Image (cartoon, rainbow, N blue to C red; front, top):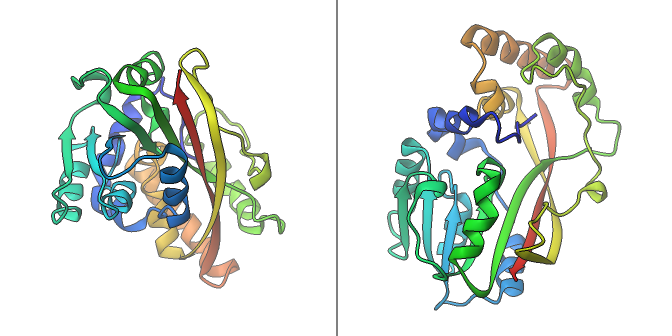
Length: 265
């Protein structure tokens, strides 16, 4: 239910409206994902890292704690401010407020460029070419994505909530969504003239949400935030009522964090 379409470019600004909530409620990436990223990309404490679209710094913090020097470019001023507060004690982090597409960066200056659930928002004509330009020889690009997946037990809540989603069509496409199984997920698309795939791995995560918490999560999704406030209120109320009345007030939400690592050609 997340929009992954860069053509609706205005949606990528919506997260800035709910920066504190975004920081509180979005699912975290597992430690194993970062251990794998470090091992495959062979970065070390002398390496230079660039993060695109860090949000409030969930992925940034995980790597900052390991001592890496990171430059993070965040479009949203409110998100960047929360990130500065969250990472105040880490002097190895430089936070730039602005768009990756417009930020001046020196060629061949980074060993690793990474993006956690943000790379799909970058302009297609720029995201690979600019990443390639600023990476050193044999440098790596890592794309982390948060995928919504099937619980493979019938997806009771997903199916029960579809009439509500049908009533409030946030995408405008009137398409019934499908929850893939974990093993059906594939590596992120790459510009194969600039990068070669060297690693792909999935990291399943299950989070239990109360009815209120799940509505808070929904309120950090771009297509929901872009909807009229009255529509949002009615939709959230219907979802919360469904969870309280039919699912004992809480649900398990299944995610799969995908890690695609590519090497600069």
